[in-house]
Length: 122
Image (tube, rainbow, N blue to C red):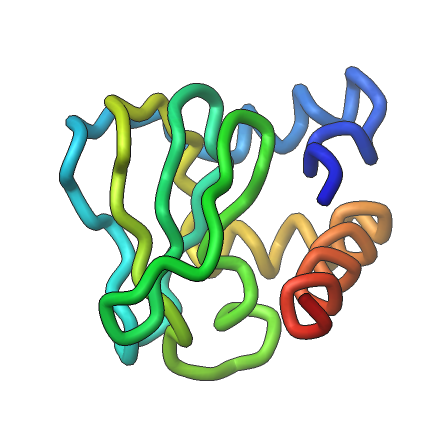
């Protein structure tokens, strides 16, 4: 899986970054829980997270990747939880921000869809 930000130009990255809010979380925290509403997504700026289904790790992702986007794109409940394996620096994107960026930036919408399709296939 490629770095989510590798899809974008520097100007597009600036636009996405400006639309979100930077947050830090300590190791062990779980900002997204399985079977909850899709109200946010995060781009991992630094650190590593575990993606878990029913408590079992199915993947790990790190800097440059996005988590929480699938349920927003699919209009569904969360299919997995994420847990911080290290301290995290994140870009918080509300569901509304994700929808706005998708409408205003077709490249963002397409990158999200590609990422969701990769995760479903993988």
